[in-house]
Image 1 (cartoon, rainbow, N blue to C red):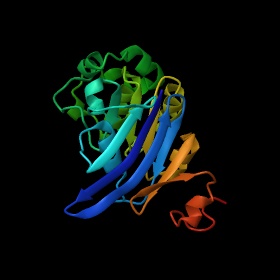
Image 2: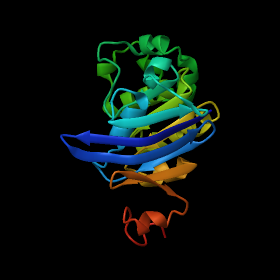
Image 3: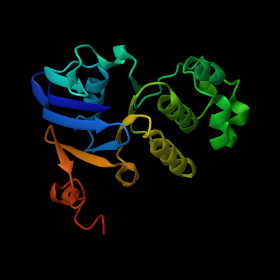
Image 4: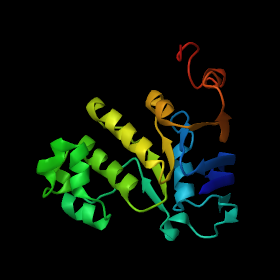
Length: 220
């Protein structure tokens, strides 16, 4: 599956936020989006998902224009920066709702075994984040959007999350944004930099220094 997001133009209060944005995302590859805070990365994911309407945007799947929000197609799942599972839902209930297997989860995250019957508000922010990432990656959608997945996650678990993302790309087209750029770079097959409202395909990591996203020598 190839998903293209093209000609995105977004304004807030007459201020241009995104202009002429293009992304190409495909099954089997992880597409990373880098950019400074406030540059519009989350807005772009919301436009792709379909819950933010741009002035202009075009979404194509395998060259066919999609004329309704992607979330209505059931093809897509989205991890926002905030917690999306309600506080008063039990963890086992969320796994049932997303049709995701609990036993497979605790084989990877064994310290979560005692949590099955807890409500989400009994977990730490990092523990909730891990479960929510897992649900988004393991549910049936063929496109996964991950907004800051490494935020709040303890270093102990970041490598497991990265391995999980890497493993799921065979089944999904994955877009990831994160300010923890080293983790994003290490897991991404394709990288775009969002700067001055437009996306720039990064063919050489040194371009991140040329575009002044990173300081000179950061990647040495």
